[in-house]
Length: 215
Image (cartoon, rainbow, N blue to C red):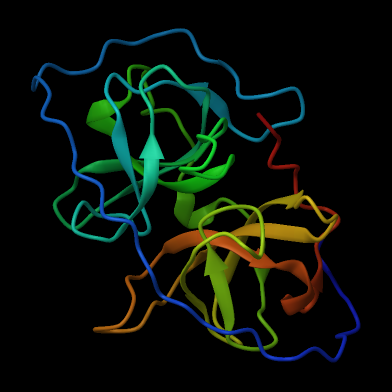
């Protein structure tokens, strides 16, 4: 169970809402074949999946939400959970493990359109009931990668219903938590937007969250 921790007085983070636009590559409408699923990493969360083409990672569960990065064809991508957009299209919350030097941070997280994933994903757990609730103690930045220097892509608002998915340390040993910010804000941010938040901005003790894993 997630336990409450003592909040530490910190300066408010600068909130940025920048997205990286990425164009999807058209593919055949043929359904993706079922494939054997392997582990994403030794300690990593989820199941390893691969994409048939270079495809966007989306901030929210929908093809019209901002692109925050790329899942490259054949890369090690951790598929975590499934969710459906307003058009009943399945998306998978994933972590693109390797990244690209100078282009994209390792372990960038976002939603991937299921049609671009080779493996069968219908058995994945639902994102809407995946992890325990965690509570931001202030409006805090959602980052696309596991570090405070990665792009800020949205906001987890103080007191909102936020779901904790996994935890990971950045290069400076600071814990980041991959979360889903449930409510969103009409006209500002999509519901169920996903990304990393700084653990010191979370009220609960997150030791019990699973490890996100590494490349």
